[in-house]
Image 1: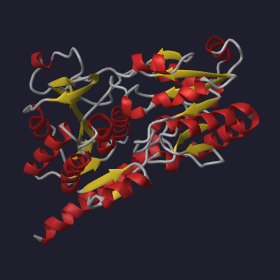
Image 2 (image 1 turned 120 degrees about the horizontal axis):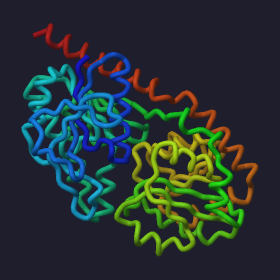
Image 3 (image 1 turned 90 degrees about the vertical axis):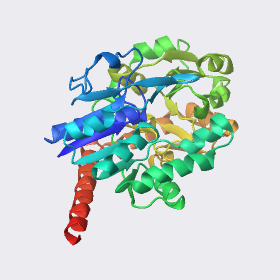
Length: 385
């Protein structure tokens, strides 16, 4: 099957959309299909010097990647926004696409949907970002506008795939048809308890403190400042991994916290396994991959009782769910697990057992089943015409 993955983000970007698009491309290539990725150009890329279609394999990419011109999002330069370009339609045509996969469609994905429609190609749209929640955070308004845009693109798709039951419900309640559940996999070989590093732990917490970690973007919608109470908890050392526009303000808001910047690959896996507790603070997650990675690492999780974490964290078995945006509840949960290492270890072990079957191979095969379903429906409709 010849599939074009149109994604708003792709490595070297580090975020959920980029990671899922990469894993999708890897699985398709591994199963003998022919994927092509279309993504915004990264910072410093010389897209104007390339031919209209670049079929070069990027580092670590499992398939050709076509980059379209982009600009940094004002105030958030880590996020690139694709500019209008003829490369997208040219890529669909040159690749002889049989199906278009739209990863987190909002800017480039909307253009991908329009191009696929013009070419009569079936589409699968993957809902990954709570843009309405982002509108609340950054603008204080605009939720209805965000939903109108999302509803328009997802309603045009043959299938919309949502990563959690909360996301399925949100999409359905906002009038999006043909929604199916498609969760995310986790690399249980990379993220594993055996990577716990006592030397690293001594460097991060030389006084023997319990290490409480956060991994993710440092941006307003993540509300990492909710860890301030944990910073003030005796016997606890907060460690933050990630970067973003809130990095400077968080260094002030979280006194005593250790900031490690962006970490990836095996280095990130070693960090996860060396934690005593993982805390995710953002209330707008459609899935929350870092929660799964912490669980695979055998680490208990504290997360908001909202969105994707509701499917991932079994309260009182693999971690604790707390009311969203409740700093006191976060501090209390951290204090409870820090004070009871045996309970924390039990939650971590159960979490690891829970995610062992959630491989990218399993969810990739489920995606292929959805592709086949869409193609069968298209064939059935064509035969009736």
